[in-house]
Amino acid sequence: MRVTPRSPTLSDLLGTSAWFPALDGSAQARVLEDLREVEVPQGGALCHRGEAPMHWYGAIEGLLKWSVTSDDGHSVTLGGLSAGSWFGEGTLLRALPRTADIIALRPSRVALLPLETFEWLHATQRSFDHFLLQQINERLHWFLGTFAAHHLMDTDSQVARALAGLFHPFLYPGADTHLQISQEEIANLTGVSRQRCNAALKRLQEGGILQIEYGGISVLDLAALRRYAE
Image (cartoon, helix red, strand yellow):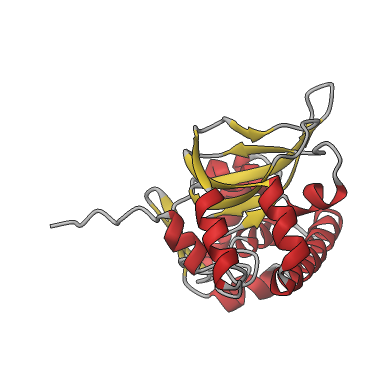
């Protein structure tokens, strides 16, 4: 008999987040009181470029992409946002309109922390500031590597990097080695055609790095996947 896995909760997200357990009791209580959850349908936007930032986001379940679309319709994907990730702090700290869209690649559930609560944590909780500094540093390092990958790496390495990014130990804690992700979603995150992405995944499978399965993939050798992406 197949058991349906339990859907993660807001409490699960907070429990695996590096910043929440480090808060003092009063700060944890305020976060729990102020957080709310929204559902974003596949293809729907959590937020749009040009909007005033009002929340800090945490991905409870699903998969989203961070992308920029030009006026003529050309789109560039900056990265994926899997369950366990917190994002949007850069825009809140800059206090400027958003420069990217956050689009759900599949039905997703997202936690919303109001701007006022985020600013209060930033002003009163030293541990929260330490988390933000490390998060921004890790994200910047990853973005720089991805920029270089698109100019210097072959398709196989680009696909490997897109997948490895979903297992970043700090940005996406607690990721399972089985990803419920379609080959079309991987192509979308990588920024290559579906045909090229599928061919790259097959070569990675032949190398014993991953296993393509119905409705997703399983990473068999995460260390090798990360080496392939370097």
